[in-house]
Length: 387
Image (cartoon, rainbow, N blue to C red; front, side):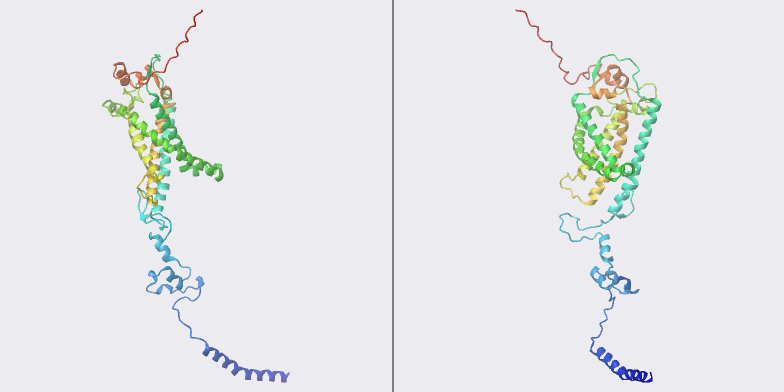
């Protein structure tokens, strides 16, 4: 045992100096370490606390930042957020801009344009548009509950007057049907995810919105063309008259015992025509043409489309709210109103109670009672003579 211990001590004494000499030679032959002045490891967890102490730290490019802080892409995202244009092969003016510059739309905070558009849509157009629609529907329901359908107070005479020609009725029905398709599809696209999606699920809702979006695109041109025809056809009889002021002051006599006398269209119908059909209709059509990229010489950037969408949605909501009252009065709200647009004719009693001044012009000969060619009457077959 003593011999083994003595042998081990001897080996340590002899090997120690040799090992030290070997380490010294290795250190002398190795190249001197170069101080890179930054992080030498690619592990982001080993970033030094004083890595940002460099005076040029804030001005570093993304490549320079990668050398000292691997994984820190702040310079690139700073340029993206500032709206800097990068390289792209897409042939559009802003294809290299991932994030739009800062703007402040009416109703939004000062932020990038995409977020500002989202704020206007979600905080203003959607909730307030829904509120206006519900208020109008509620008012119509209360009015129908209290007043019901407005009946004729006198007996019909059987004498018919042509209120709408076939051309006028064709233009109206084309415009009305296209409007209903656009309204239903637009409402589903705007509010469907809040009302319909939780009920039917994502799959069925996806198919529904896809079908309605295509219906929206096809009904749009029909609405635009028929709208122009409606404006040209009915503009003359919707020009303001002195008698319209009295109708407006008394609310048309709707809450009284007798309706205020009016010409072919009363003041309420004229307000609907100029504000709803002419103004809002042209705004909806014009903004829709922009969204479909059909207007020539217009640069279709994201900002252009965002503004067009906000204008289109806001105008469409107001237009639908106004037309709800028109649809009500033209269907169940007034006896004989729907029949007038379906057949083109009204009874003399209806004309006297609802448009007395128009009837006076017809009876005095200023306006013909039959403006279109009357339908051809069947001729009796010739009687064959016996030979």
